[in-house]
Image (cartoon, rainbow, N blue to C red):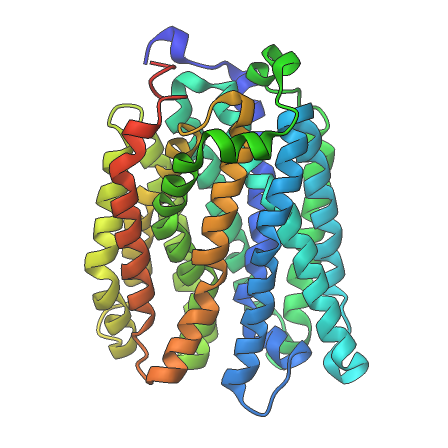
Length: 426
C-alpha cells in the first residue's frame, strides 16, 4: 500500500465512529432473534411452543419489512443533504425503540396490546436500521476510496462484533441470573443495555464531519435520488440484490435463527449453544477483517464467489452435523463463521462500486434493505416453517443453498456494471 492510499489517525477515527453505530444497531436488532423463545413465551404465548416461536419470528421479520421504507426515506435525505444527520438521528431513534422493547409489559399484563406494542417497536427499529448500515458503508467508502475494501471490511467486522456482544450478553445473563428469572428478565436486560449503548453512540457521533466526497459535490446533489436511481441504474439494483442474497441468508440463519433452533428444536443446552455461537461470530469477524485486507490485493468478486461456493457445499453437512452431534458444536460454528467471512467481507465494497456518488446512498440502501428483508429477515420464519412442514431438522440448508447459488449467479455481472469506486480509485 503506497503512502497516498493510507488514511491518518483522524480518518480511522471517522471510520470507527461510523462502524460503531452499526455495531450497536446490529446488537439491538439481533438480540431479538437470540431471545426469540423467551420473548415468544412472554409476549406471544401459544398452546404450541413451535407456533409461539413462529409468532416471535414473524415479529422479527416485521422489523425487516420496515427496512426498505426506512432506507428509501433516510437515503433520500442522505443523498440530498448529507450523510451525517442521518447517522445521528437513526441511531438515536432506534435506541429509544430498543429501550422501549425492554420495558414492554407481558401478554399476561396487557394482553394483545403488549404483542402489538412489541411489533410497533420492531417496525421503528427496522425503519432506522434501513438507513444506518447503508449510510455507514457509503460514508467510509467516500472517506477512504483508495482502500475501500479494507474500510468496508472494518465496518462489517465491527457490525459482526455487535452480534458477538449480543450473544455475549445473552451468555452472561444465562450464567449469572437465576435460571428461573432468565425467561422473564434476561431479554429485558439485554434490550436496556442496547438502548443505553445507542445513546452513547449518538453522543460520540456528534463530532463527525460530512464525508469529503459528498461535500465536494453537494451543490450537484440529486433532487429526486430514488427516481433517478430506478431510471438510470435498474440493472445495478437487480444485480446488487442477488449478490447480497447469500450473505443475507447466512446472517439470518446463523445470527438470528441458530440460538432458538439449537435450544428449541435440537434441545442443546442454551448456554452451550450461545457460547459456541459467540465463538463462531468472533471467528466471522476475524474472517471479515482478513477478507477486507485481502480484497485490497485480490478482486473482491473472486472472494465473494469462493465464499458462496463454500456455503453451497457445506450447508447440508453443517446442519446434519448439528442434528447428529457428530462434530463439536463450537468447531462447527467457527468453521461456518470463517466461510461466511469471505462473503461478509467482500459484498459491501462490491455494492458501493455499482453506484456513483450522486445516488450512492440511495442505491446502497435500496439493494441492502431489499436483499436483507427477503433473504435475512424472512429466513428464521421460513426455516422454522420448513422444519414444521417437512419434519426434517436439516431443511434450513435448502434456504442457504438457494440463496448462495443466486449470489454466485449475480456475481458474474458485478465487474461489468461496477467501476464507480474500485476502478476509479485505482
